[in-house]
Structures are given as structure tokens and as C-alpha cells.
Image 1: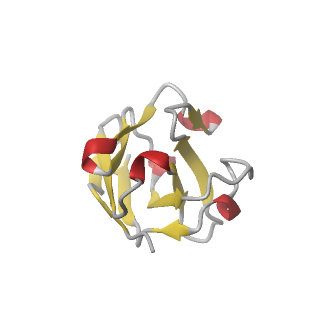
Image 2: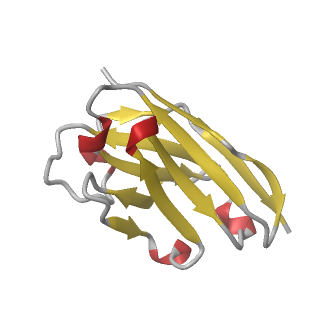
Image 3: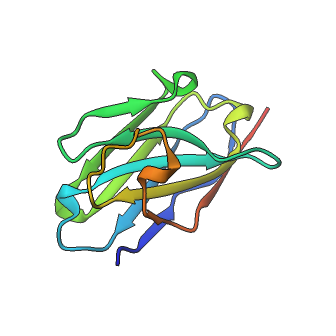
Length: 125
């Protein structure tokens, strides 16, 4: 069983920055593939970014160049640094973990067996 707890969300003006933090339990965190997803009101949950156990990263096109995902295995943590935020980035952001390194797409929710409770990010115009 893996527990994920997100924090770092909040209210920020357009153009501002936030850093989301996800703390994970488990003795083998360094072997997990990790992802960030988001869900805006009335919308489906969507992929934002992912980082593999070997530090390969993936991003949705709309956040490339603005968001950075990285991990600190010694702290069992994964981060999402979000810069140049836009109102359309407003959503609840979720951290997700794949502990089995399955071969599903990193952009697919089905890849990840464990999810956090989410943290709200609101970007005002």
C-alpha cells in the first residue's frame, strides 16, 4: 500500500509560480513511476506530467516550458514546479504512483494504482 499526500496549492495571479509537493510512503520509492494529473470543474481528469524511475520526463503540450517535474528519492518526494501560470491551469492537481512499472502510457490514468487526495490550484486573471 502506498500513500500519497499533496501540498503546495493555492491562489496565485496569472504569471505567478507555485511548487506542488507530493510525499509518498514506501520503501522502494526510487523504483516508482510518478505522475501529476489535474481536474478542472466540469472537466475530465487530464495528464500534466510524469517522471520515470530513471528520471525520464513527459509533459502535456500546454505546460511544456512552464512546468517542471522532478523527484528527490532520498525524501520520497516528487515535485511539480509551475511557472508562468495561466487561468486555464486552475484545477485540482493529483499526484499518482505506478509501483509495478507497467507498460501503459504515462499519460493514462490507468497506469497509476495509487492517488493522492489532490491540492487546489487557482490562477486569477
